[in-house]
Structure formats: C-alpha cells, structure tokens
Image (tube, rainbow, N blue to C red; front, side, top):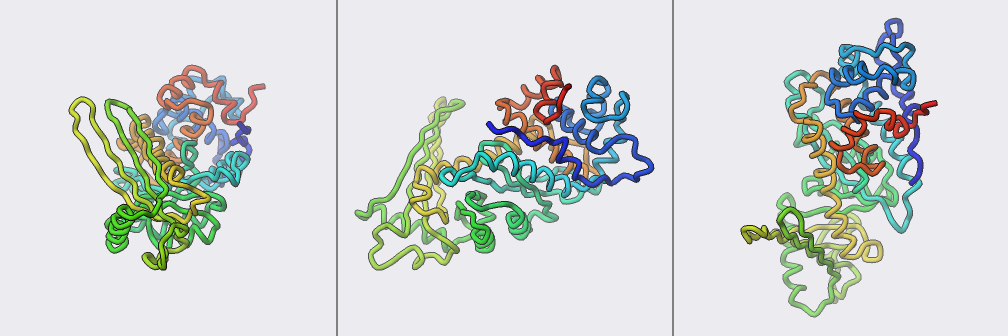
Length: 383
C-alpha cells in the first residue's frame, strides 16, 4: 500500500475567504481539525468545535498558534464562505496522487458517477442542492464533485465533471439517466472507457437490444457469459450477464448496423434474480447496456464486475453519509456549508477504508477514543 500524500501540505492551496486582519487561526489548522472531528463522528460545525475543545493536546499537532481551540461560530462562518469547489479541487489532486501508483494498464481503475441531494439545503440558501459525485469503485475515494442547480440538468454537469477528471485507462460507470451520446463522446475524447445501462430513456435502443438478444439466444452463435451467486441477509441473488461484440459471428451485419453509438464495442444483457429465503418470494429484472470495452479488455465476467461495482457509490458512500453521518437530517444548510461538510465526510470515509476500517461507525468510535491514531492517517507527525 503506497503512502497517502500529506493533507497538511496540500490544504495550504485552499484560498482563505476570511479578512486577513481578523484571522486568529490558520486555515490549514481549521480544515485538519474539521477532518479529524468528522473522523471522530462529528456531524456539524458545533460538534467539530466541541470535539476539539475536549482535546487541547492536539492543538500544536494541528498547527494552532495557541492551545485554546476555536469556537463553533468560527467553523460555521468558515464553512458558509469557504470556496467548496477549490476544496474539492485540492481533494481531487490528493486523490489522484493517492491512486495513480496503484493503477496499471492490465487493471484499470473504475469510476462510478451518480447524483446526491442535500435535503433541505435550499431552504436556507444552500448553493447547488444536488451534486454529481465521481467515486473509485471499492476504494471509497471520491475523485470529484459538481453542483447541479436542477436535478434534470445532470447531463451537462456530468460532461463538465468528466472533462475535468483524468480518464485515461479508466472505466466510467453510471446509471441510465447519464447514458447519453455526449457523455460517451466526452469519455472517449479523454481516452477512457464506459459501461452504460440502456433503459426507457432510450426506448428505441432498448427495444432493439431485447429483440437482438432474443434472436441470438435461439441461434447457434456462441456468446460470452458469466454468473455470480450471493447469499446475504436472508436472500439469494443470482446475476447472469451475456455479452455480444463486433467480433461475434454476425454474418453480413455488425453492431454498428443496429446502433449508432460512439465507440460501441459490446452490448450486454444482465439478469438479476432475487429469492427471499424465508418467504420464497422471487423477483426478476433484466438490464441491457452498451460498453466501449472490447472483449479483449473486458469479458462478460469483467462487465458483470463493473456493473456490480457501480452500486458501491450508493451503498459505500451515499448511504454511509445518510445513515452514519445523518446527512439527510443535517441542519447545516447555509451558503457553501452543505458542500464543505459533504467533502469532509468524503475524506473521512476514504481514510477509514484506506486503513482497513470498513465499518465507518465503528471507525468513528475508534478515532474518538484514540484521536492520535488519525494524525498519521492525515500525514501529521506527532513528534
């Protein structure tokens, strides 16, 4: 495991929104204090201030000039006015420095892009109540965020967000809303690959895919397929994915004769069958999709892994923020505060997972009891 770049160094690049003549505490110290507080389970500015007030021995390690920790009003004003996009940009650079040494051409990193709403933030003037987030599969590391003024406008925001990320040798997954020509073209222009589900928002393509798999399923054409079976929480879930590519025996036709889609190399059919063991109730659903990955880059098993991995952004990031940090009921609503708190939670979740703490609530209790342990996670020397 490569070392994590020091946040102490990188946070110095965040511009300070405060009037210089009235600054009592360094911005870096306040931000590191905030991250440490969130790692310890704090859910807002007041809790962050109280968390530090009970641990004055940390003041010098965090870079404060005095032993007295700042009050809650200091954090409230800071989070309201701090440029959250500048903070996200610094965290993005930190994340890139973290992940790049572990990447390889044979094992490209996968990014999931999905939206999240800060509930209630609009009531108090919160900026950009809905955001798009890009997260590395399985790592829990948030690479970037972008605000969406209206939830129906995710598409242009997604294009802009992806255009600012390093996509070379990476695979981007998303939900059906973002399955768009423009987004596919943006990913390909930046030398990335995509896996996109096709649903009712592309009615013609969805119907064509159903007919295509129905016809070839009854033909002698050999198709790539993969299956997984998982038993968890009283349920058995079976997933089967079948893929077809340009290299399959199509006779005089090819995928491009059926679909006008940028960079299309394969199409897939994914079946999910869930059985509840106690009641024996069954549910069945089918998903179709496009991918720019060739069979040599990703077979049916790899495509199944990408689709399964995409939901980590919901279960491993958004759900943790909503349940563990109670984000949906947060009273942090003014100005840029919701975004800044969300960014701090993303950093805390990433650090916990990086150090083998996959139960975030349990990790919060550990850091609350042993805050010095988190100093090393943040790249702060205790000497």
